[in-house]
Image (cartoon, rainbow, N blue to C red; front, side):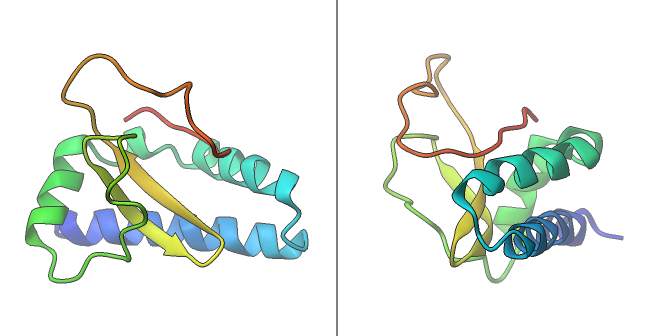
Length: 113
Protein backbone atom coordinates (compact mmCIF):
# COMPACT_ATOMS: atom_id res chain seq x y z
CA UNK A 1 0.00 0.00 0.00
CA UNK A 2 1.44 3.46 -0.85
CA UNK A 3 2.70 5.34 2.20
CA UNK A 4 0.43 8.35 1.54
CA UNK A 5 -2.57 6.09 2.04
CA UNK A 6 -0.97 4.56 5.12
CA UNK A 7 -0.45 8.01 6.70
CA UNK A 8 -4.00 9.14 6.01
CA UNK A 9 -5.62 5.87 7.07
CA UNK A 10 -3.41 5.54 10.16
CA UNK A 11 -4.59 8.85 11.61
CA UNK A 12 -8.20 8.41 10.48
CA UNK A 13 -8.23 5.06 12.31
CA UNK A 14 -6.75 6.51 15.51
CA UNK A 15 -8.93 9.63 15.37
CA UNK A 16 -12.08 7.60 14.79
CA UNK A 17 -11.27 5.31 17.72
CA UNK A 18 -10.63 8.30 20.01
CA UNK A 19 -13.88 9.95 18.88
CA UNK A 20 -15.87 6.79 19.60
CA UNK A 21 -14.33 6.28 23.04
CA UNK A 22 -14.86 9.92 23.95
CA UNK A 23 -18.45 9.85 22.66
CA UNK A 24 -19.08 6.75 24.79
CA UNK A 25 -18.00 8.84 27.81
CA UNK A 26 -20.41 11.66 26.89
CA UNK A 27 -17.55 13.92 25.77
CA UNK A 28 -16.35 14.30 29.36
CA UNK A 29 -13.46 16.77 29.12
CA UNK A 30 -11.29 14.64 31.39
CA UNK A 31 -11.82 11.57 29.23
CA UNK A 32 -10.31 13.01 26.02
CA UNK A 33 -6.66 12.96 27.12
CA UNK A 34 -7.06 9.49 28.62
CA UNK A 35 -8.72 8.12 25.47
CA UNK A 36 -6.08 9.70 23.23
CA UNK A 37 -3.18 8.48 25.37
CA UNK A 38 -4.59 4.95 25.41
CA UNK A 39 -4.96 4.89 21.62
CA UNK A 40 -1.46 6.29 21.06
CA UNK A 41 -0.06 3.65 23.43
CA UNK A 42 -2.02 0.91 21.69
CA UNK A 43 -0.77 1.95 18.25
CA UNK A 44 2.24 4.29 18.50
CA UNK A 45 2.79 6.37 15.35
CA UNK A 46 6.57 5.84 15.55
CA UNK A 47 5.99 2.12 15.05
CA UNK A 48 4.10 2.69 11.81
CA UNK A 49 5.68 5.65 10.02
CA UNK A 50 8.30 8.38 10.15
CA UNK A 51 8.21 12.13 9.82
CA UNK A 52 9.31 11.77 6.17
CA UNK A 53 6.12 9.81 5.47
CA UNK A 54 4.02 12.67 6.81
CA UNK A 55 5.92 15.27 4.80
CA UNK A 56 5.60 13.17 1.62
CA UNK A 57 1.88 12.67 2.27
CA UNK A 58 1.38 16.44 2.65
CA UNK A 59 3.27 17.08 -0.60
CA UNK A 60 1.41 14.40 -2.57
CA UNK A 61 -2.16 14.41 -1.25
CA UNK A 62 -4.86 16.23 -3.17
CA UNK A 63 -6.90 17.19 -0.10
CA UNK A 64 -5.65 17.71 3.44
CA UNK A 65 -8.00 17.58 6.41
CA UNK A 66 -9.20 20.94 7.72
CA UNK A 67 -6.05 22.67 8.99
CA UNK A 68 -6.66 23.77 12.57
CA UNK A 69 -4.76 26.90 13.65
CA UNK A 70 -2.23 27.12 10.80
CA UNK A 71 -0.97 30.48 12.13
CA UNK A 72 0.10 28.85 15.39
CA UNK A 73 3.67 29.30 16.56
CA UNK A 74 3.43 25.90 18.23
CA UNK A 75 4.99 23.86 15.47
CA UNK A 76 6.92 24.96 12.39
CA UNK A 77 4.53 24.11 10.85
CA UNK A 78 1.65 22.42 12.66
CA UNK A 79 -0.02 19.96 10.27
CA UNK A 80 -3.50 18.69 11.09
CA UNK A 81 -3.65 14.98 10.25
CA UNK A 82 -7.18 14.32 11.53
CA UNK A 83 -9.95 16.79 12.30
CA UNK A 84 -13.10 16.29 14.34
CA UNK A 85 -15.42 19.09 15.49
CA UNK A 86 -14.28 18.52 19.10
CA UNK A 87 -10.57 17.65 18.71
CA UNK A 88 -7.80 17.21 16.18
CA UNK A 89 -4.55 15.32 15.68
CA UNK A 90 -1.52 17.31 14.57
CA UNK A 91 2.05 16.60 13.62
CA UNK A 92 4.25 19.37 14.99
CA UNK A 93 7.60 20.04 13.37
CA UNK A 94 10.34 22.33 14.68
CA UNK A 95 13.18 23.72 12.62
CA UNK A 96 14.95 25.06 15.72
CA UNK A 97 15.83 23.02 18.78
CA UNK A 98 13.86 25.23 21.16
CA UNK A 99 10.15 24.60 21.51
CA UNK A 100 7.26 26.17 23.37
CA UNK A 101 5.97 22.75 24.36
CA UNK A 102 5.33 23.73 27.97
CA UNK A 103 3.68 27.05 27.07
CA UNK A 104 0.45 25.86 25.53
CA UNK A 105 -3.19 26.48 26.38
CA UNK A 106 -4.62 23.05 25.55
CA UNK A 107 -4.67 19.53 26.87
CA UNK A 108 -4.14 16.31 25.05
CA UNK A 109 -1.83 13.38 24.51
CA UNK A 110 1.55 13.49 22.83
CA UNK A 111 3.71 10.98 21.02
CA UNK A 112 7.20 11.56 19.70
CA UNK A 113 7.82 10.47 16.13
